[in-house]
Length: 297
Ligand SMILES: Nc1nc2c(ncn2[C@@H]2O[C@H](COP(=O)(O)OP(=O)(O)OP(=O)(O)O)[C@@H](O)[C@H]2O)c(=O)[nH]1
Ligand SMILES: [Zn+2]
Image (cartoon, rainbow, N blue to C red; front, top):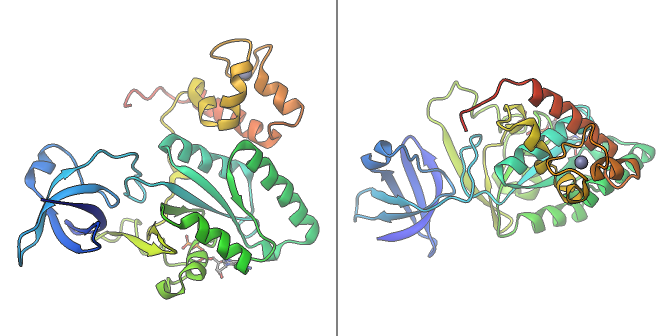
């Protein structure tokens, strides 16, 4: 019996890399299907290897988290590629992406793309915005020149020794960024997400690629479009700076809307919490409140 990590899945085959760096092609045994366990890329597994034949997976070790798109487990962080322009930037989309990651228990890293399209005055606004997100507790990479040494050094430092996924709207610059970080990958811009997960292809390949001493999923995520399975009451827990502030709210279970003595609203008023985050919270709160209860979870 050996142990390793699934680095690629393709048509029912799982390529497992052992701690010695050896790659073994395996299949999952029937008992996985019975137990409704589908091994995922990123899973730590035990497996049996047979000389000259495909090995088979014995057990999937407990997961820290898992994503549906891309189907990857044990993800450390998500690089949220966020264009400052083309497509237009909105805090609403960014905050929804951050919420989705918080729910999935995956650390976000906000990476602003296309800063070369900004005037200096516009750049100053993004500096202020980045400072707000940093204060809220998020990692933010914002550089004046895309793909400058400083920008690439920052990205590589973030990727090192971690399992990362990259997410962002179509056209946000995900493949362009990856191509700069790892030129040998040579991903076709505009094709990274077109080729996969669009329903047309039945043989879906998912891979963790070695990039800058880390592992990165070759398929981007789209979780911002997904419905959130949480209640309006729970929402505040997934805005980290709200959660921190809420210990000082007068009422336990304060949802930071109409309650008196709300520490979150106080911090919005005095500029500690970003107004845009609060406005987006209120929009999401209303959406969730109007949503039919979801008893699935
Ligand atoms: N000016 C400018 N253009 C950029 C930058 N990064 C990417 N682009 C352009 O933006 C367009 C979209 O970039 P992609 O890297 O294909 O975007 P993507 O996020 O991979 O898009 P999908 O594959 O559709 O999800 C391309 O025409 C890129 O050349 C940048 O930093 N500055
Ligand atoms: Zn409150």
